[in-house]
Image (cartoon, rainbow, N blue to C red; front, side, top):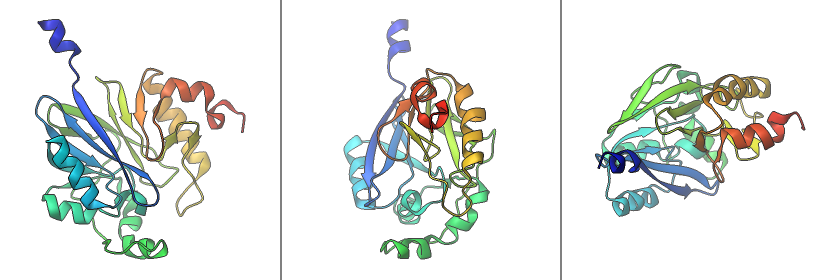
Length: 222
């Protein structure tokens, strides 16, 4: 019986691609409590709400990896609809959250709102959902306030747009720095261990080990 308990999945997740950016909005929950969090609701809020209903979970929080429009466009609307707090990103992305409307206008996104989170996240903080605990890693470079959510027990991370399957986050947007991004990845993410799997902000996920071995931005092949 003890073995069954140990092997039972501790978390569940559904990825909901949203907006024209095909951003991986992630619904993540604790299996033991069915308490859930929505990570990066970039838009298409009705689509997100439908996934929540279908999954039969109780969303208690919204987490943001960073402040770019494709990750936060639906955050204020979803917060109002669910009446839950927003946690993240790091306060260095405040300038992005203060300009969601103007950023959305550049891409024809209407109905978005400027907002502030209920809690800014810093290196070393922890966030909780049900019985799951995630450590916060501040990983600037793609944006100044990008954060990564890491669950040590499950060997799992949500890395936003810091690291991708075969690539890394773009750094040509305001506050971006390629050198800073590579430093964040090599000093914060790679040491987590090759066995750590991750969901990223766009496209398929991967593992730290896979990216260490094959990602051209990390192997020096670029």
